[in-house]
Length: 401
Image (cartoon, rainbow, N blue to C red; front, side, top):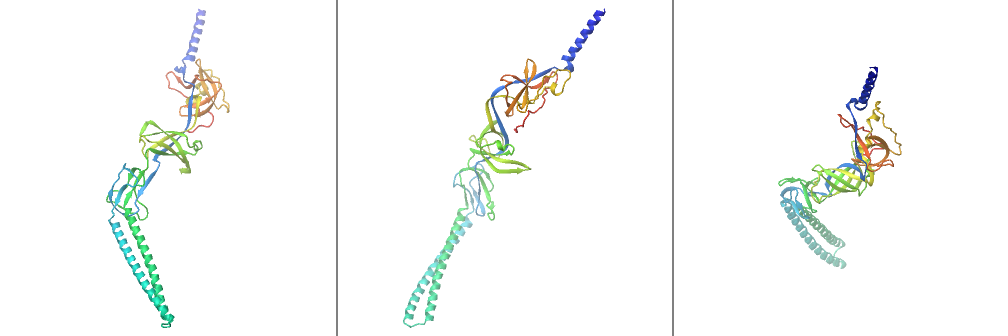
């Protein structure tokens, strides 16, 4: 009887030990893994910008008046020299006729002055001969000579008046020509700020009537790149971007200019980076917001792991469970930079790696301890519980994405 009691105690102890070993808290630890891959990885700098035409011209009026006709509207395609609007020309036509009359008057005055000057010259020559014969006095000769010189001055004055009247006539004709608002370039009207019957006043500044984009096939993005990232951006780098209007489409461009002038807003310093875009499909429209990703570095045929693998640490390590034997954990050296956990035959094993460039999904790694195809742990799961991932950033400076 004693023998059976001892056997029962041993069996009960084994059952209890098994329960606490395998079914404690009703959880069984499992791992989510991914294979170490070899491929291409790129490092991107993200920024938000606005899509604009490469060249836009504001069309205004140099004269004041009533808009009598409009020959262009929104989205109208215009050519160089094409009339877009007409300001009432009647008042300016009257000014031209008045200038013509003033010029005619000045011309007649000039002819009259020339005739008087010629007559006074003849009289002066006659009086000088009489003075030589002692017939008239010197005072009479001086009076005639003075009249002659005055008439010559009057001719010069009349000539100046003709020049002034001619200039006034040219100004009046130019103002009349400016009543026709013409396009200075080939393009498309993207905005119209005037209607028929509206009076435009050009007293202090030129009023804007139209805004013309030269070409909507070649567009540009004005992006604001943070000062922490601008050192990695260079002219010629490839850019990918999306717009809210076409969320499933990925457009491409290229960095063409990095402007030196800083943009400071609420103590944040950014730099205007120009990205050229081919808009041959005419999907992109001026003013759209572009979410850009500038490719600042790229490597091919490198080992890469999911970013979650560099943030993962087994719960037995992070919580220090006393009921389990923790896997061996080694602190990575500063030269190595980070570590990952490999799954081999159902057990996790630590591997020290050196991280490189990273994108939104993967990080480049280099290490003699890992090879392509190995299983790397990205998360820890337990039966009856949700996925648990220990958020631990890799060593070293994080990359702004």
